[in-house]
Each structure stands twice: as C-alpha cells, then as structure tokens.
Length: 131
Image 1: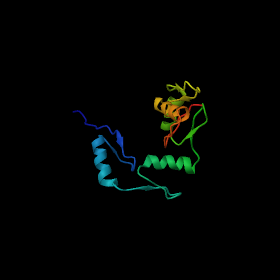
Image 2: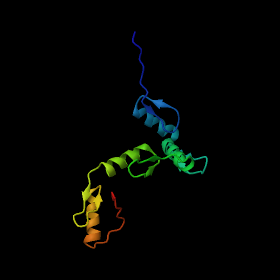
Image 3: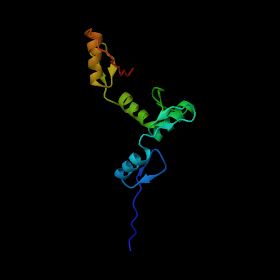
Image 4: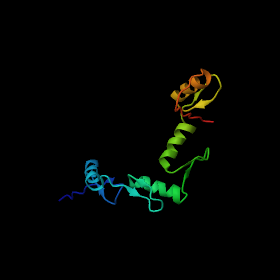
C-alpha cells in the first residue's frame, strides 16, 4: 500500500499554515486574511503581508541591512540587493555619446539626452546613474 503524502509548498505569509497548491493558499488568504492588516508593534505602521512587516522590523527597528559590497548601498532585503547588483554592477551599460555618463537602461539614457543635451523638460525623470 502506497502512502499518499501531499507536499506542502505554499506557506501563508500571514500565518503559520502551509498548503499543497497555490489555489488552496489563495482560497485560505481570501477567506481568512482578506482585509487584515498586520501592524508593527513598535511603531503601528501597517503591512499587507508578514514578509513586508518582517523586513520593516529588521531595517527600521533592528538595524539589519543587506549591503552591496561594491558600492556600500544598503537594502532591507536580499532580493532588492541582488537586483541592484545585476542591474548596476553587472548589467548592460548604456553610455551617453555626448558626456560619457553611464546608465543601466536605454530609456534612462534617452531621457538624459533629451533633457540634458536637447534641452527638453520632462517631469518625474529618475536617473539611474552608475557612477
């Protein structure tokens, strides 16, 4: 006789329960946690999921950060640090042909050229400079 063991792969980020399928997890979250906000006990800030609350507590109240070894920038979680390293330090670099500034995205380089070298004004441009 073969035992039927379901693998638990999908943990709820708002409580300690885990589920064997994503659909069961979604049903649980909607039925049990819908509209529930998690509150930081130290500052009353509210979060939608436990992982965001945990990251907040680590960075805001415990001083725990993930630091980039290449530029000393700090992050509250490992995932944004990894994205930063890939895009800034190992990503494709786009260099302005007029002033040699480097950018991680072609669109950011295009915005830079329009504003700085062509004199166009564009609101809310966020430069993603490498150096």
